[in-house]
Amino acid sequence: MKSRVQELAERINMSCDEFIGEMRKRGCSEPTALKIWRGEYENFEDFKDNDMNLSNLRKAAFVLRVGTGTLLPK
Image (cartoon, rainbow, N blue to C red):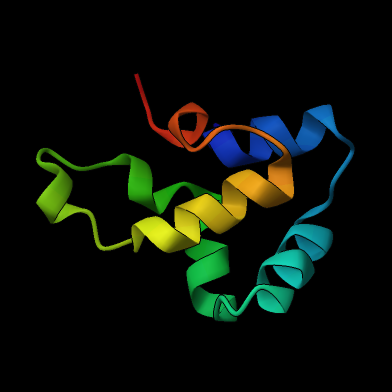
């Protein structure tokens, strides 16, 4: 099953390597960028339980050309 980030990247024909590279340019570590790519931030009960830094999600939203809220699960 694809993560929300993977679905959005697919819409703009962005590969995993391109996504990771763009995130690295913006100061995000490769392990964190991979977690975002895999959607590991999507599974939480309370937002405080989320170990992804909101600034990294903002970076991902910028890279994918979407609003930050688009990345959050419904």
